[in-house]
Image (cartoon, rainbow, N blue to C red; front, top):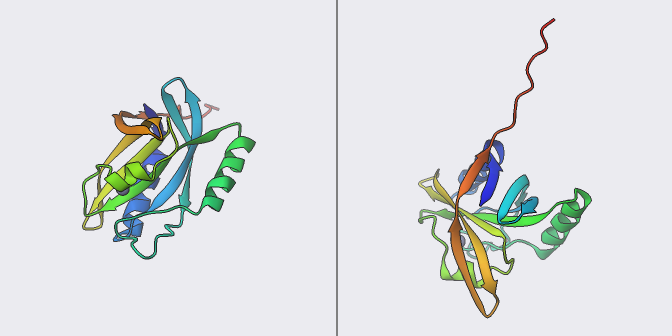
Length: 152
Ligand SMILES: [Zn+2]
């Protein structure tokens, strides 16, 4: 399960729309408790696939290393990645599976039709390099208690 704040969820979808007709991509930091990944920060990344940005995405490995360092400094880890599918359904492609190497991490996909974000789905990468698969997981919103104003 992926637990995410509405703010981070909206940001991922905003990026998907902003990058249209190209694919957006980013790294998701957070914490892991059993099967539950909780998002604490989303990091927007440049899609380095300028040759085919409409249907491919790639994150500079240097950005991934930087994100890992940032995560460690926060006592967190990389818990997933996000990208968008311009004018395509929010279903992972054969290439998405082939290029996914972070096991037990969430791969979030947002479908963007004519520039508007539609469905966002999350898939966890399971197995090993020899035999891997994506399994859809639920996305749950976490709500933060708003501090009540102090009555004077
Ligand atoms: Zn994809």
